[in-house]
Image (cartoon, rainbow, N blue to C red):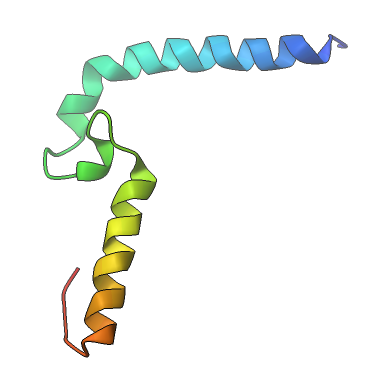
Length: 67
């Protein structure tokens, strides 16, 4: 089953878009409102970066923290 390379990426994009539209309808029921990594307009890596910054600052000041 051979097909041009550009069609492989196209199929992926189509399937991803379909899944995205279906998931948008149910995600608010699955994800708790306190999970800020899944807020609209935010990136998962942003939350991780903030957590790392808090951890680094606590280590520099030699204070304990719970993240």
